[in-house]
Image (cartoon, rainbow, N blue to C red; front, side, top):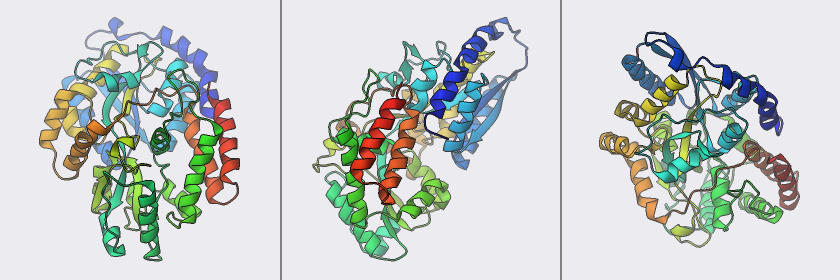
Length: 426
């Protein structure tokens, strides 16, 4: 997808969306026995598909007149498809929503205001991440934090000591990754902080910056992006990162085929809820760590409790009441919590969270304990990203690749990325 097409594509269909939202039949006109079918779209692993289908079955058992039609895709394919559907006024009734795109879809009228979902048991710090334009358009399913996930066997085979993640710095990270990569021709040190993009956000937060402000403006200067790309170039020059083609191949691989899952990579950046799923799909022994910081002080690592994802509804749904019933069930029922466990983050509903934690074992316990352990070190959540923010990740990735392939200098990439991001933010 070309840069800006998500925003422009949705904008093209926004009038259609808004018109469709006003002409739906609405469940208040439906008889109690009416057979209703709702579409539900999400992205994720095979494990998430299985978890979600279990939730759907439980909901349908309690609501026999409502059937849920599942639609799932990988992350990138999901957003390409959703942009096309939204532009045509054909959004799914229920959709999984990510913070990077959330405000964009809300501002363009693609999302339904969620007024009938119970939220008393969800912390305001999480709810606020799904609130924009004066309304609640997203209900958080759970929360997680960007983190480092390490392959224990890779460290052991390389003879590299695992760090103290409460005190490690970026210099330590670079040294460790380079040592792992130098230990074998078949082993790489680490990925960049780019995957997920929240890793870049955290790096900027470590410098006292937010990529965007609460007002939807850029919170950084071109020089800040230059310095990020200089950081990436430094890691590359230190032989801490795989070759650029390998990074691109790994980025496109599924979790079970990724370098870390195959035991060929020491460290990746990922959300804490990826940790149990990655162990399940890879069979590898992994560790979950805090991010490195510039100072070696854990309170300076830029981490925060990020709503892992939201459930939202299409503004064009013909059944707003039933849609919200399903979202309420998904977020607030113990049956849903026990099916999802930590796959969509540690549950946002505090009561469901207690039930889920009591049932966890193995990697899920580690992920839950990790989030509790770091809680006192965290800073406030980043502002809800503005319209057009969904293009920022692609822009930064593209220019990062230009640096890693040695086609642009960090200065050239930073200035070009800044100009493009500035023009894309609406």
